[in-house]
Amino acid sequence: MRRAGRAGLKTMAWVPAEAAVEELMPQLLPVEPCDLTEGFDPSVPPRTPQEYLRRVQIEAAQCPDVVVAQIDPKKLKRKQSLSGCQPAPEGYSPTLQWQQQQVAQFSTVRQSVNRHRSHWKSQQLDSNVTMPKSEDEEGWKKFCLGERLCAEGVTVGPAASESPGIDYVQIGFPPLLSIVSRMNQATVTSVLEYLSNWFGERDFTPELGRWLYALLACLEKPLLPEAHSLIRQLARRCSEVRLLVDSKDDERVPALNLLICLVSRYFDQRDLADEPS
Image 1 (cartoon, helix red, strand yellow):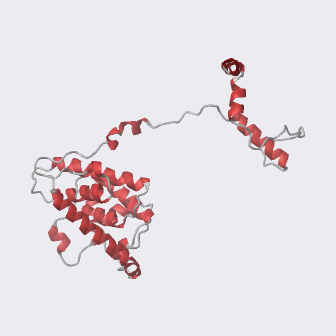
Image 2 (tube, one colour; image 1 turned 30 degrees about the horizontal axis):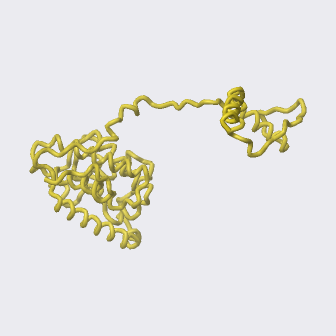
Image 3 (cartoon, one colour; image 1 turned 45 degrees about the vertical axis):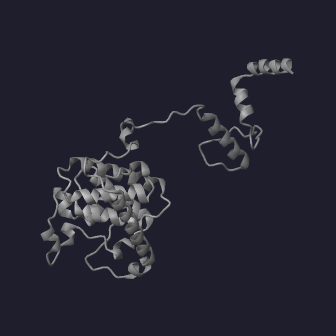
């Protein structure tokens, strides 16, 4: 048996590389060389089965044995995207009880949205509400955050948002159930991406927080890979902004903690969770 095995290995060493590849990749549909006329032109659509098969043979022969992927060097710099959240500063991290309460309340909100989605979807929108198309990133940013915030990068104060005769075009439309109930999962994911991109370069605002919470409430489980990546990106950005807050009494801290909590504990991204204070 040993001699036979050695002889077999020695014989295999003499087989040309091309033949070895052919042996490992047998033809599923063997095709004999096609006897075609001299006027055969592979650049025109085939007219007979023989011409079609010959054209497939020619294209297969032109395929390289090795294909090298072209990778954007900029994407290689995003190693931080695989890391977890930045630890909360001393005294900023919420208690475990608080996090559990938020998860329970969030679960109730999601159930209510799903239960009444058909009802709210049937409600007529106000005449001044025109929802952008799913692929309109700039349109959705202005719709959710307002033209003023998108243009100037400033936050609209509470007095402006509570005064009568509100100009929602300027300060953004709130995530009303009649609006979010009309958004399918593709639109929910797209808008979440648009707002996450906006948040990646700017500070946290109440308008942004309300929309992020509403979009998470509409996000279906199990998560699609794209949504999974987006919510992890969101939690990491929240942790980065939290490091820049001067005081733990800042109103942004509970909102940032809430988003991190929901991503990590409701959507099961436990490696991003805050350690209880």
